[in-house]
Image (cartoon, rainbow, N blue to C red; front, side):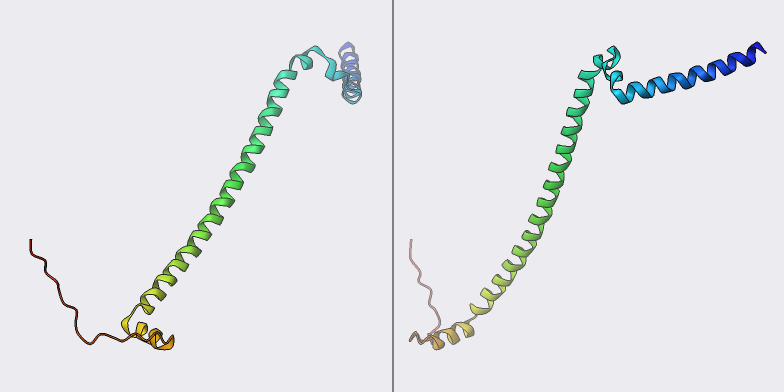
Length: 122
């Protein structure tokens, strides 16, 4: 019988201790305990590390977005360069040059004689 009473007593003590702990958490007295006060520098350190981690993540995401945008711009500029080079090759053909000369009425005539080499003696 003694064992049975001590079991009920321990249950009552457990529930009373739980209520006391809950009350301390709600009213904030748990934060004034020496163990918690001694850990404040560590909590500050953890907070600073969390802020640094979040800032690092945002910075790396920004760099990734910028990299993707620059790669897309490089692709566009490369295709524009190829198109421009192709157009330049087309309009620099002799027949196209003659068409442009006639269209703009520049008064230039095509040479009928082939070019000659000039040799300079040493």
